[in-house]
Figure 1 (tube, one colour):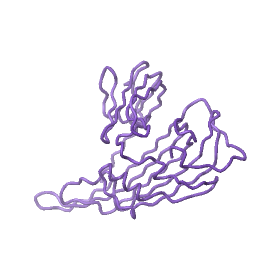
Figure 2 (cartoon, helix red, strand yellow):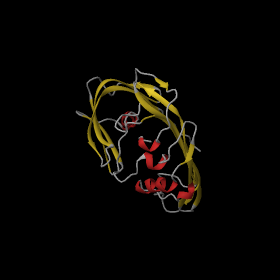
Figure 3 (cartoon, helix red, strand yellow):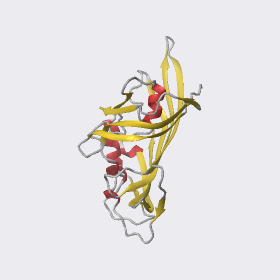
Figure 4 (tube, one colour):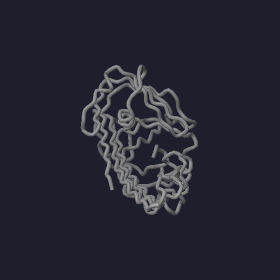
Length: 257
């Protein structure tokens, strides 16, 4: 097997203006005037983005486009810059609350099972058929924290998908996924005010996929193994989050998570 590794790293400061939202207020397009941007592709710094550049992010029908106001960007730069932004590309996609949250009142330390049926619906909207019984996971309300005077929920979620590989629904004829495990972990601070941005968020994704099939004139057996590992951390700089003492029970369904 041939291993291919791509490392992308971005640190971006800028002024962001949301230019369009979906029916429930999730951003679908935005502009960012850059104050400072540092990019690395495979540990090599690149100066593709400069101060005062205007980054345009547009998402539609599941595809997100990144461009600059006066020029196009390379695929590597596009993928790196995309790490700094989150936009919604399908208005019918269920919000995170309906997949990972709960309508029941919870206290710090409580856990609950994620909603597999809703997760399966979102996969379907992205073009992947994943049965609910292939999905598992849970969410934990870790504690409550104050972030610059804004009450937040410290939430941790995990989702695991077995034997169905997201993004692998359109394989060539004769090939199929024979084994796969995909794990997504999200941990962050979710403002109780749903109009506020999440000030601290880390997302981890790992995928191990095995694909088998036949190819060539002699229908030779082919085995493809794919490993993907991705971790994205986003923080609003300048303010630290502090635990809230004697905080009342919260309603996770009132947050963005």
